Every structure is written in C-alpha cells, then in structure tokens.
Length: 510
Image (cartoon, rainbow, N blue to C red):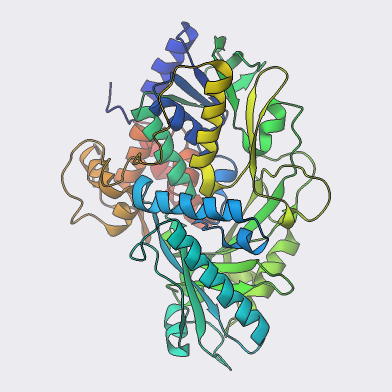
C-alpha cells in the first residue's frame, strides 16, 4: 500500500472491495465537499470507522466556487450576529496558525477613499475594520499572522492596487483577512488527512436508498452496486442535501466571480475592496490569486429551481460586478477583459421571505424520521466547527464509542507539523509549488516518476508536471476534470484548459 495519505485508483478499488465484503462502519458520510471532508476527518481522528462517498469528485460543488477567503466574520457583526462573527474569527485563527498555515495567508483588503465615498460611509468602514481588529484579538490570532487595520496614504494605495482611480484619491483604509491559496486544495488536504487517520475516501460513488443505518452504493466507474450498513449516516451533500432527505428545506443563493489576467488590474498586491452602494456590510472584491489571475466577486442572488451540477453566472451579475468595480478604477475593465467566470450555490437554510443576502449563514444539524443526520447551511470558514457539531450529535444519538474532538489542534497534510513522508527541505523548489503544497512540496517532486517533473505543464502556467502526476497518485484524481478543474484550477480559463488537457491525459494513461 502507498503512503497512508495517498488516495488513488488502487486504494479506491481496495476500499470498495472491503465495503462490498461487509467491512464494519461507524459513520458513513455522503458528500465530498469541505463539510463532508471535515466530518470524515473529525470522526476518523476520534477513532471511528469512517467512509466518505461522493458522486462526483472532491470539491465538485460549492466548495470550489467560493471567494477563496477565510472570513473573520466582520459582515456578520455588522448585522448583529455576534455569535457567528466570533466563531468565524476563531476558526480563521485556527486555520491560519494550526490546521493549515500553508494554505491560508493574510490578504490585504484595500478600500480606496474616493470622492464618491461620503464621510459617513468612510466612518462606518473604519469602524468595521476596528471591530475586525477586536475580533482578531478576541480570537487570539497574532498580529504577526493577521496584521491590524490602518489608514494608508494615496501613494501606498496606488502601489497596492495600481489601476485604482487617482482623481481625488484621499488615501485608503487597509485591513486583513484570511485567503486560501485555493478552496479545492483545502478540501483535498482535509480528505487526505482523514485518510491518514484511517477514513476511506471514495469519489464517483453514488448513495441511494439512504436510511439512518444503511445506504446502497453504486460505483460510477464499474456500475457495481451493493448495500452497506453504518451506525450513523451523515448527509453532508450541501445544496443537494434535499435529494438525500426530502424533508429538508434549503434556499440556495448564487455567488458569481469573474476571472481576469492580473495584468488587467496592474498586478495588484491587495484586494481592491469597493462598498456596494446602498449596502452596509457588502463589498465587491478584486482579489489577486494564484496562476497570475484576479477574481472579481461577489454576488448574492436567489437561485430557485433544480440544482445544476455546474451553475452559470447570469449576464446581469456580470454587468453588476463590472459596473461596481469600475467606480473605483482609473482604467475601466470590460467584458473583453474577462477570461473566465464561475458561480456557486450557497446551501442556505430556508427561513422564509427576504433577500438571500440577509439569510443567516448559521448551520443546523437535523435528524430525519429515517434517522439520517443532515448538516445544512453554514459557511466554509466554519467547516471544522460544523464537523465537530455533527460528530458530537452522531456520537450522542448512536451511542458511539469515540474519543474527544481533536481537530482544533490537528495539522492538515502539508502543514509544517504534518509534512507527510520525510523527503527533505522545500528550499529550491518553485515558490508556486510550495504555496500549494507547503511542507509536502518536496514529496510531490520526490514521488514523481515522470520525465522533467519541474517543467511547467504549459508555457506561462506555473503548475509543474510533478503536480499533475501527484494529483493522480496521491490526490484521488481519476479524470481530466479532476486534475485540471479541481486539483490545479487551470480550467477556470478555457484557453488555458485546452492547452493542458493532453498532458493530463498522459498522466491518467500511465
């Protein structure tokens, strides 16, 4: 068997065979997004026998369509939801200092003080940033990890965001929040850490005929079906949770982002942060990201009707984002500058009428009449807390013998204290590779059997051939989409995707 953290086709086949032969289970988790992966890790690290099944790939749904931010909860404080604000700041600090310091870093958020921004609005933003500092201190996140907010001069505003409008620029307000190198990478790291603790992680496996103690599993690759029993069945299917338990009532909302070449924004260092007119606690962000890109978001629109596998941005959302960001730019960006776009659906709990932007981001753990335990609502930042809540409930309801929750202090694969197999220092490796894999970066290269492992997969794309191979041998990638669209995110830009599909096929054929 490969290293225990490795997820690949061979391990998947062995795990499926064991389940088909009646392997005993304590917890079966349905859903391979950040919540399901978090539940699998929490349960496995307590010593429970765990299987996670996902009908597509890890992070196939909402978990890969986020803003890549680990929010400190400031917007929730503005609406009076002190509890979720405090928890968000605490969970952000746990991720940045203990669980995943290699995947979450401080991102400067810059609000330019332009003539269109009145004195009252400036005071509100500054007060909000100061409240954010209080939340950070209350969570005991060091200022060295997440710097305190401050006002900066116009010259520094332009250095941080070169294309900002300079006419009448009166400096800016600068604050910091947590930024993920990538949300799908976080899901993969959590799932692999769960595997490190003994969980079986099975993608392309569909769950049907779900009850509180049994599930019918169908292997999407072979077509084989069989029944499994578990002491607890957890529904963590996100916006699809209602397909598992029809008694659940969700109200999805769509959040859209546009993708730009970073050059269109002058290769910014900070996230240009523009208050949405008429809103107290909502902003549009132009955020510098990996692969030399800028993501512009975020919308919050009701998305009634059937749940699509891959949501699509609306023309109105695209126009809204462009119009809003252009109020703060000296050189406008237009649709011709957009090189990609994506939309995700938030699995909000249906609380009745009102805008989706105002619906609480609280989560709920619900037991159905059949005994299925569902987790609904919530937000990416609080995935660990949500998982702890779910497993606590499962242990209580099913009388499981489990240890206490360990995930507050548990480093994910790639964190400095969990580098995986010892393979030497990361010094001398491409910075982009280290940014994505942390302390595990040396193993990515050491495990490579391909020729030219440090060569880029295509000119101008800083993903190496070794990373494509590692996705297949260690990260559960079984298809081209798994490699290109989720493990590396190259596929967010169609033109880049086309250039690397052949390379991905090469590694899948090995």
